[in-house]
Each structure stands twice: as C-alpha cells, then as structure tokens.
Image 1 (cartoon, rainbow, N blue to C red):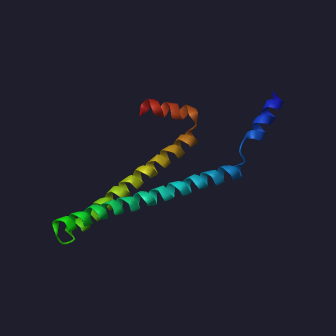
Image 2: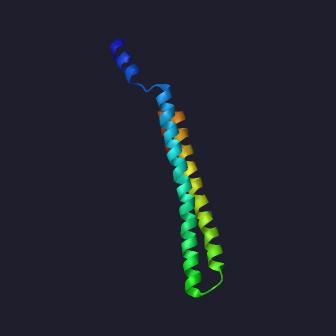
Image 3: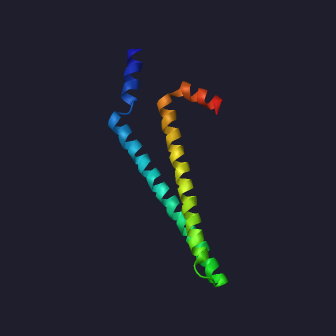
Length: 105
C-alpha cells in the first residue's frame, strides 16, 4: 500500500506546474475572447460596408452592422466566460457534487 501511495504522490503534478498550465489555459481563453470580439466587429463592418456600397447609401448600414457585430462579439465573449466559470466550479466541487449538479440541470 505504501509503495502505491509513493507512486501516486510521484505522479501528482506539483502546485507550480498546475498554476502554469491553468495560466496558459486562461491566456488562450483571453485570446479567444479578443478574437471573437474582433471577428464580430469585422464581420459587421464587412456586411455594412458592402451594403452601403451596393445600395449607394451613406454609412447607415456600416454603423448599424458595426454595432450589431459588437453586440454579437460581446455576447460570444460572455458565453466563453460562462464556460470558463462552469469549468472552474466543476473542478472545485469535485466528482460527487458535479454529478449531483448534472442531475439538477
């Protein structure tokens, strides 16, 4: 039994390694959120600019679709943040609390 415990202890990640990996994941998530926001703005700009050029209007559609793209980007960012929060809460609760939460939701 002691030999098994020693092997398990040797395989457990050190606290520093866990922090580095978690920080790396959060950095990736932060970039993902920035890219989602910029993509929403870019798509809104492209659609608005194209409509304004095609219809020969003032930049009415450009402004409208940039705001719609901003709203879509922010909405997507909030969904990503909720996803991260859900993962962090699931990790803190442990396997038994996680299974009970799955039954409720």
